[in-house]
Image: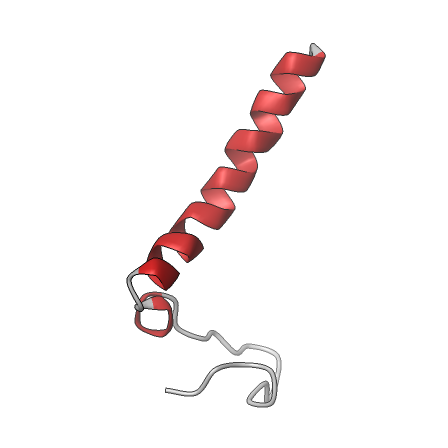
Length: 50
């Protein structure tokens, strides 16, 4: 993979992760759009509350 292809791959990957979060934040809908999923015990101290 060329350096340009690597850069494109990582940019595309980061955009897939960041775009939904940033869009929800910009619309003031982050908590509604991305609910907390707690599968490892009590995480209320580190998660938002509804």
